[in-house]
Image (cartoon, rainbow, N blue to C red; front, side, top):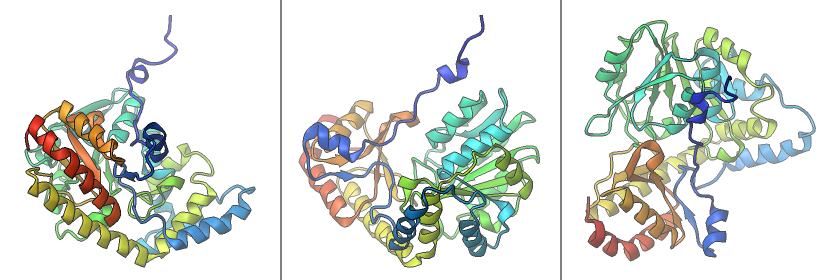
Length: 373
């Protein structure tokens, strides 16, 4: 008798998001809550984005523009592309879903790193693909030489989160060039640049827009630096042959009207983006200093979050629960198979002060129980 659900679907675990603020408020009766778990923009959306979305509410009885002409035109102007090189979706994860649906078949191979973005791994497994995950280097960076050595005739996709989530590390230009020399034309490279805006000032960061490989698809999002994760809008760049085939499996009218308008407004508000990046830079430096001062050595990050190793899974859970009691939400990384690590998103100065106040309360007992890293 045939099974109703394929084995590779039954074995999947549901993606777990960071704990919502309302849920914590209900559970503990707290009024002061700082969510530092989901790498969101603590400044919120741009006023330009709010204006565009608010004005669009009057037209929500109409279907959105399937061609997304306004938003695509803005992206074309910014990145000097043609509309046929762009695809939009419900966040960059939505486009990852299109890629898996269009190009990936059961038992084809996907090469990536261990402990990388869990969302893509779930999508690849959902079509029955074979995941080959290469161990990281001691500094938590991708081992591109080991990844290159794994590429074969069966390799359909190489997935690179650059910068990576949840470590915050990145692949350099030299490393990317090395890897691409070993990628055959029948293999698609996904460059997931969800945190591009935070890393773009690194002199050796390989901004994919300076490359023109026919088999590379770049993914970016409005959910992080642009601050509209709640309406879900991401975009991808690639050769028109790849993008054209992605459109064949894309759901119609996605992303929706509000998302398209919000993304268009956000893209036009450079001062808001600049404030976001400046806040992130200063508060991340303050967080790193605080952790080091308390004997905790974080992973070097070029993103809007910092990850560090604890003594064990028990220690990670203890720290997570201890901070929850004070209304601070961070992210333990068990789902990424890094149970002895936690990740902290960068918040506003007030939110980070809240974190330090809570840390100061629980850290002496935590270090006494588990020791410092």
